[in-house]
Length: 393
Length: 148
Image (tube, rainbow over all chains, first blue to last red; front, side, top):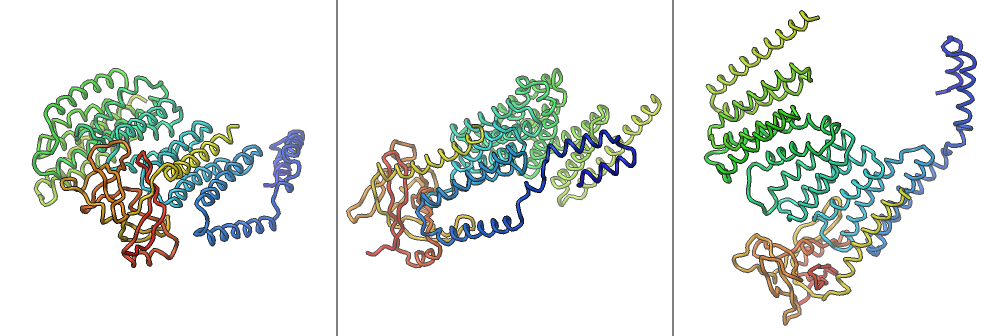
């Protein structure tokens, strides 16, 4: 945009005084003494593109005969180049320092892949994702930009998946400690959500450890995360609390689908664990009611252990319906966004339909009528609420 | 200072990984394994030969499981299993049994020069030279056509 032209236009329209316009022009002249000097000549840009292409073509043509050390060295040099560009663009306040450092981080991953390949080693282990995950976390600790948090989250998920189907206790412990440290020291929403999800993921990863078999690692992890709220700050809790009903709702649906689609008694299901889960659920209910109200919904999962003994899955279906409807009322009363509760309600109907009505039309009709009744109830509750608010105003 | 911490740490890590590979050869023993090729190409990593080892037979009762094993040179000059256990012990290579044979992640694939993969796969009788460190790390060094 031509600043001088716009200033003259605003001056003519009497939006700016002559003095202010002169002050702005003076400021712009000092800030950008000669804009044209900063621009790279077109010919130089074309030349640079061709030079880069030539360098890469040369490397590609000779890649097979290069000694392994040179291959790793080339990728590491590219990594240094991009970190250098990042530093320069940050100092000059131009360009995209974050993007350059992200490419530098990617080059670090590439250097490990190239090294593994050049030295004939398997790249299927978890060393590579671990190294890039740690590096991305350190980037975030140093520069506090959401892009590094995103990279750390993606590499955290890759690290979790890389050690499937088996993970040692040591690796699991180190990963959980890293994710928990990230969570505790996070202050921004995105970083908190990503680290929280990784802690939850490490709970799911307990299925890959040589631990006691349990069907309920997601529930135990969610309960742990509820009690973790006690050590977090008020601001951290405010940003994290919406995750609890959301993840609990999805977990309940998954348990409903698994129970409904499995014939007979589930392997690994025991009364002792079901009882312990119910007791822990009561503790979560108390903690939620007392201190973190949105986390109360997580307590519903305490009943899953006992309800999984019901081979018809009706108890789980009724609980999911009641929880969905209850949340819609709760959201309405507390003026929360209605969409999540509504979407969950629809999802519950869909899962129930698949579980119970696949080939059994009578049951489908039964649940369809039930769904219509619940909708009618929810609609009338909303209507009464609207009338009450209108009367009050 | 802050700007150089990450590239320096990352370079140091890659250098440590490379040194680790070289250390296997510096302190390890060189062995040759009979190998048979199968399969082909990775779009990201290039051409490689997947390998199985006919001399590394899985002991009965250890099918499709994690195993810890050491290698020794047999009288014919090719490596065979020295000792194998389902529990880790010092100097053991961590691997697994599959299809009545023992292998390890570091042994199962070998990256080759572009275009040489089909020739090696067609040859069928191959040999792999590996360096095995006293602490159980392996470094595959060469893949060649076996002439017996």
